[in-house]
Image (tube, rainbow, N blue to C red):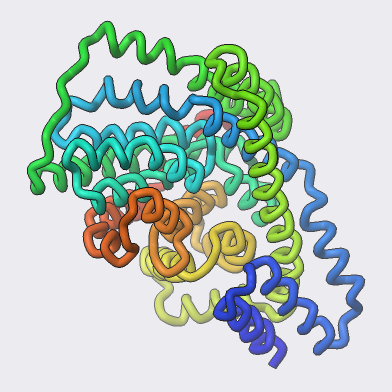
Length: 425
């Protein structure tokens, strides 16, 4: 009855439009009272959930991403990608994917990627004769690069929920899968462009490409500082995030000279709001996860899946299906914190490394950001592109297939995600 009450109140809150964090918190408190458990235990779980040093990196990553969004880095990355791959048939679609890979590897946020690059590329694509739904679909699905390619604050959430998985190993593990996923999306963008008869852009010349790289390099170096500092062992994740934010201020204010006071205030306010939402979500999700463990939900779910099949390949397929369905109806950060304690023990039981499982979760739930009914990136992309959600979803399936194909490769070929982390062991 307590478990039914926990999930019933939580989903009732979601249906009623209550924010995820408050729905989690309300359901948790009610069940604590129902079971007669001391409320100070719930308070302890909430406080301990956010009293983790590595979580300090999240506001720095978010702030660095907002500074780059406001300070002109995205525009220069788009120019570089356009010079490099714009001459391919349907070039602006491929440019969109390449820009997302570059910007996502700096900002670490899929929603920021959709907002920044979408506002730049979608109007240009529409002017060049590309259909609005195509422009939105490419922008939305390629934004998942910000979740998979490091740095990603969602990886930090997973590391906390998984009980101390190495963040640097997760960063390394996300590089190859993120590149493969973007390559698949690029192929899908090209094939759809050929089918629809979209034009190719003229190659601007090697000198223009070189100049574009030089102009974009200071912004690209932000990723080197953040990711390189962690992987080299010189800095912790939190320190690299702080240095990345400082460097972003220097580049956007002094080198590119586009970060004025008003844009700086916008970046600060947006970062504070986003960080507050993430931290409240972490706190309430940790208390919610405590009750899931108390009710032995991970064991029940593991027994349910293994009762269907004891074949590891089938078990992994079932886990992927469950995560994909959940990603369609719930927020990504909340699902990371709730699903990791449930599915990670099962993944370990069949021999999967927690680092590989973390990348699988990132890709699954990243796809959820692009699917109705609650896909944040899909909403942002449709608003920027002026397209109805149902219109975009009708033609987005080639890009979904590209992401799912990359996901299956990462799931069933461990070396794709584990090769780079294993080199450091």
